Length: 208
Length: 174
Image (cartoon, rainbow over all chains, first blue to last red; front, side, top):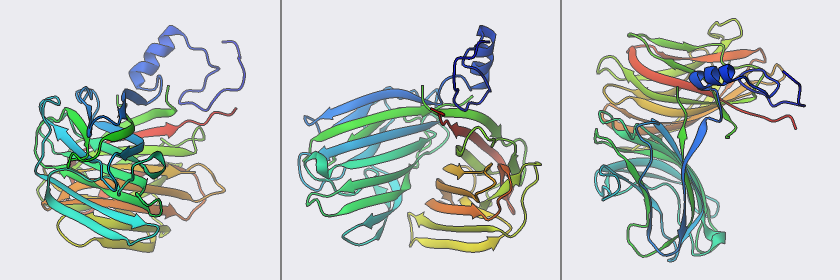
């Protein structure tokens, strides 16, 4: 195969050119292409208190990654929470969640947050009403499409509050302890007081 | 195309105390991402899972050179700190039981760099003894030898489920 220049490190040493049979074999091995596969990207434009992912390919991926950046609300010091659906997003479950996470604040206190009966899962600290006071976080979901397993998540965040003076971070996780398929994800300001602005991307983490 | 490359998928087979994932770290990558899913005990007896490193000959490293520090976050009670130095048994990555098990994302740094210790960090979510728990933890193997992989061990209660996937974070050479 011809040499076409400096090559990136890769699973299989190569010069950058593959034969059809090599592509088939790498695809079979799960090594062809990237392993973080974009399922959907959504932008909240400030007209709704929620942002829904309703085609999450839960039958293909058992680990999902949700990345949210530069998201804020139209009302000050709100939280954008996570809810799941078992009917494809026609409705979202609003009870029975559990979570445990740590809060760290640059100009405030550290604290433990826990609950065994909440209507959503928190994944970040308060945000403001402009881009400079937004939330950035990621969430890993596990087993959303497995009807015999609970749906778990872990998260980490970095956010700025409405005063622009408190940088907050969270890390921890949550669970919806119901063994059923969860096939839609919602970002929501559940008090319905703050419309969302920002971008969210949902990825599937590839498996063989 | 993302720069995350699936390298290996290993699943628990039968009822075992240890799952070894050797020969997955190479000089191709400096940083590796690992997902662990459904680490579940065979019986209802809960147990903690410990992570140890595997050398370039495929042997689990048992010298007392592992330091770790973490925070256990439990939905039902106060959080706890977990820390120690110079451990040979590894560091706890999560606890689990049956039927829900544990899930986690881990990262490994510089396992094949002989000028560096091998560092790792992880975050988990699990149900153990009916309590939801998430563990955030860092670990280091204070050796500069080549590390080709890692192992997961339940010392008391064997596991019969669990899937581990290893990904490399690709670096372009320019």
